[in-house]
Image 1 (cartoon, one colour):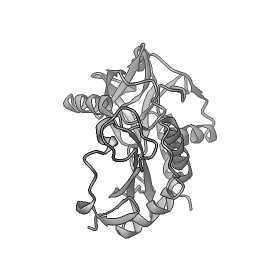
Image 2 (cartoon, rainbow, N blue to C red; image 1 turned 120 degrees about the horizontal axis):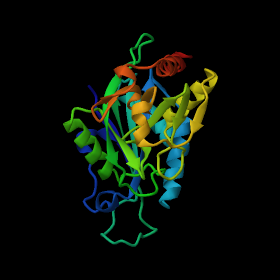
Image 3 (tube, rainbow, N blue to C red; image 1 turned 45 degrees about the horizontal axis):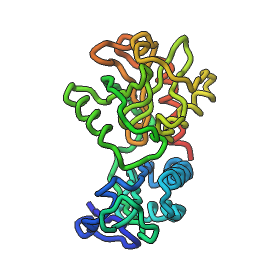
Length: 279
């Protein structure tokens, strides 16, 4: 398999793509990223990813024209001979001597790579996972898709050590999101998810799920719910670019809704598959 990446204006083999040891992305996690899913050679919700990248760049005062990332991403997928892919975009402040004060003359480092992904078949089954809750000790600007992911990676790793597929963050007793996903729950036949404020990342797939629920006539409330309510939820599911959508059958060792994917989750999953399959 070809393994071509993009770094600072050039396409080259991954093993030749070298970063400076003085990269601020290494020193300070000074950068932002996106992940775009390609289905059958086409980027899914590309414009939404571009807009979120721009918001993230603005959020850390990093001046960079993100518009070309879409065409670079398309080119990268073609160069790697892929149809189904996940493309990672990363823009960091760039290399400079270590200093907390940002030098405005630094040139950003731009890095993209493409990994193969499994195709989404029309008859694909809805994945089901277990989850554990975790204290949400992240910063208060989670709306920025920042490289500062250490709390997320620790939570996800600790969840994996317990045999769980996701860690669900809880702040002040309320569910915010997963370590790499957004979280939804169903109460009385209606869908709830944390509002898109500073405490969560406004997920692209999250917004697609909300849109699809609306088309299906399912009421949606962007309102936080308590972690203690997870056990009484009729259904729980997560969304994300990598995850797509997965039902949560168990939280902290306790079954949710009998350990099965519920009807609303199934409806949204089928609508999502149809949306991807639409020309």
